[in-house]
Image (cartoon, rainbow, N blue to C red; front, side, top):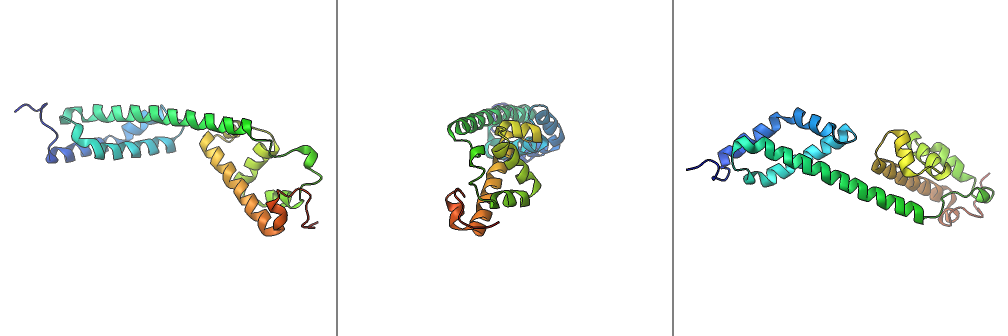
Length: 188
């Protein structure tokens, strides 16, 4: 019986998995050279491990296990960059379609509570609001300045805005529901 024609047997599946797990540090170095940070490399490796468990029966012999797994990793990196490009494009389109979050001519009519709430935010959220909403930077520029991914920057900005909205609603009530224009909360 030819070894290359046999599907992976159950006893060889453990050998293949052990072989893949033994090369974890090499896989991380491979991914680290191709993606933006260690956390992304870990995420991709974890997903590749899952795929290997799901499709391990496709390996025809144990000599090809590492080559097969490297092919999974290469495809995962390509998929990662496709998703990143699609998200970045969507963020750019959203930013171009959205009106500016802060208009200087509205400064006199915007509730004074906004600056208090922004000042009380945790540093990473305050920085996001100050650089993007108040400073006019794009999410991509903010990400570059903070040395984080564009996706992480977008999530941080979203969470910061959500925190500001929650705080304003608790302080100002109905005024906050109307974007704090022509403030009626009477807070000095």
